[in-house]
Image 1 (spheres, rainbow, N blue to C red):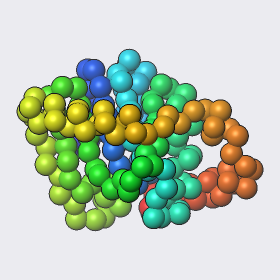
Image 2 (cartoon, rainbow, N blue to C red; image 1 turned 30 degrees about the vertical axis):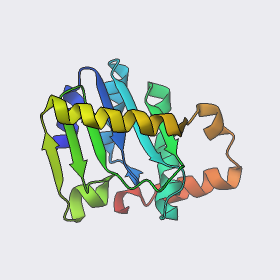
Image 3 (cartoon, rainbow, N blue to C red; image 1 turned 120 degrees about the vertical axis):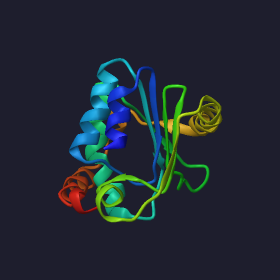
Image 4 (cartoon, one colour; image 1 turned 90 degrees about the horizontal axis):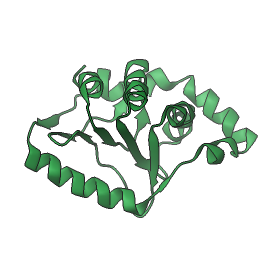
Length: 163
């Protein structure tokens, strides 16, 4: 609920890093609404993950997010396992929570929420460096995926509530 609240209250930006991106309907809607309000919404996910089902399932969310103005970045230089959220210039979250149902509802997770400009500024620097080293995902890239990968993504998405 806190993540949803922060997404709805954002005034300027929402930057997210997560290795497992399988958002529930509420978070997905909040991300889209933020982008439609003109908020700079960016999601940084790994180029490759250690969980094939999650990698396939996340494709189902990317296209609809891109349509609303959310920018998706794929990070590949090193392993990406950070979980961070930066809201505007004053709120930062760092912890163990992924943007998936397991983290939100099943696993025992811990996250530090800091309403502090200095903390947020430090996060901003880390995000900017990561964005420079990442590549932007495009709609044309997603539509050019092989039919077999598109079908596998749709099938994996059926399992999203359990991932």
